[in-house]
Length: 310
Image 1 (tube, rainbow, N blue to C red):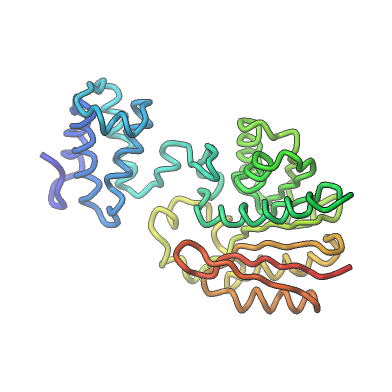
Image 2 (cartoon, rainbow, N blue to C red; image 1 turned 120 degrees about the vertical axis):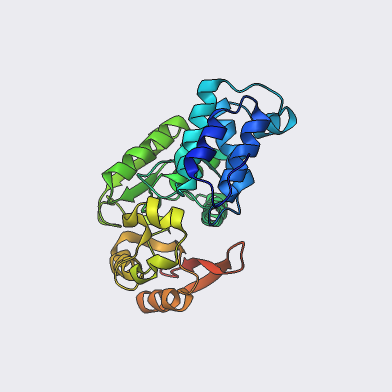
């Protein structure tokens, strides 16, 4: 029988560990996951974790529920589901997350890549390709500030092979190690220079296109975050200084001396930070042009800032 809120977790775990087919394991796992708060994704979580353990596509698991599950795999699956019941993110449990159609390694060294950040990569690809299309124009120099897992820089390098100079900075040595691992796995490590340091300070030269998905959650808002985010993802990459905007303020203070004439800045920001970002941009650049892009939920999420300098 599946878990209910009144059943002890060890009972649910034992039932799952004793499952002998894919279908039985999936049913037990989903029931267990649905019995805890924030269990709306129980079915998908159960499928992803079982696919990881069994080494099979989700479609195979759903199409052939009668296939046997080895006892050791059932026990391993039960252990992973127990960790998910404790709200550990699925991407950390499997060690993988898809981003821009690419498979990235993910663990607690960096934030899990989000779907809304794909909007930043898509905007950057458009910008870079427009610049490459200009006659006699060299390939633009690009930097990804606060690279984390390297998702932005690596995806950009993979999807636009004409880019030969991409920098990626982060203050976290652990995050940079993960980013290098992703770059190596995806075959673009030779085209990305990973630099440890604060924001733009490690840059050896001015850039044409600046991308940044910096920490922007105000520390006071930590209780509003989902448990799996607040408890497991690195606080260094989540919380912006002061009111959440401290990192962006420091970024704009560093920007003027580290951009080429006519550079473009692309920033991801919090749902309620549009006005502050626009003010920072206008204060830094008198003749700035700003386009705001909404995310998939309709919230303002991305600023494309053309400096207009010459």
